[in-house]
Length: 140
View 1: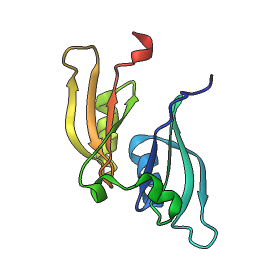
View 2 (view 1 turned 90 degrees about the vertical axis):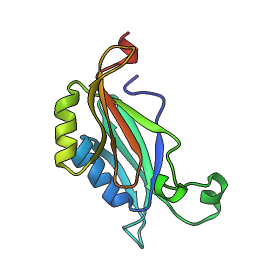
View 3 (view 1 turned 60 degrees about the vertical axis):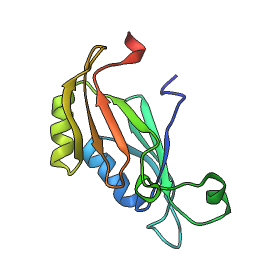
View 4 (view 1 turned 90 degrees about the horizontal axis):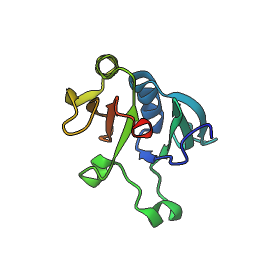
C-alpha cells in the first residue's frame, strides 16, 4: 500500500493560504487542488502528502452538505477537537523550519514522557494543532 488508509480531512476559512502554509512551514507536497471555477479562493478539495501520509482539506462553505457535518475551523468553534500527528526524522530541525515559516510553536521540542522519541506541537494559521515527532508507532 503506497500510503496510510487513514486520511484526516480539515476545513479552512482561507484554504489557499492554508495550503501554502502547510507546504512552506510543514513540508507537505500538494498532490491535487480543485478550486471553484467562479471563485479560485474556494477550494473544493485538496490533497497534501508528506512521506506516506496525506491530509485532505477544503474551504468552509455554506450549503446543505456542509451543514450536515457542522464543519468549521477550531477558531470558529472556540476550541480544538483533534490534532494531526506526523512522524518526522528530526524534530528540532523541523520545528526550526516551521517557526521560520510562521508556525506558532505551542510546545517546544521535548523528549516524550513515558515512551520513546521526541516531539513538538505547533498551530497552523487557523488554530489546528499539529504534533510532530520521531516516535513511529508502526516501527515499535
